[in-house]
Amino acid sequence: MSSLDAPFPYADFLDQFEEAIYWHIAWYSRGIRHLMFSNGASDDLIGKDAHLHCRLGGFLGRFPTPPGCAEMVEQLNELHEQMHALMRDALLERREGTPIGEDVYAEIEEMQSMFFSSLHGLFRKVMEDHCLELARQQIGAQAAT
Image: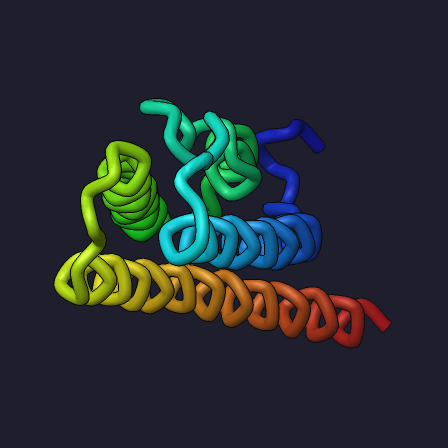
């Protein structure tokens, strides 16, 4: 069987995606903490290409796109980049001594909500497709006996 005929590695994708989601939540928490309590955010929070170097961005960049999910992954990548840009801008304002208003936190919160809605949609679609693949395999195995 060629690699083109091989089934998509759903279990690996889901395991690594779940870990990447955890690390995104940790990144978000660090960003909010820096907004609230300090003005010394590191490059992984304020770098222009930080979205490419975080664990979620790295995962999305290296793991193959699940079948039928290209549009969802593209949307997730766009929202991910926007999330990083919003956090970066707010952290740079904070570093310059500009008070961060409630509107900035609301914008970050809204973007995070949209991002997680997209994230959940992709996770759910891949999980459903994985379950269907497992069911097909089981039916095939039963038919062979």
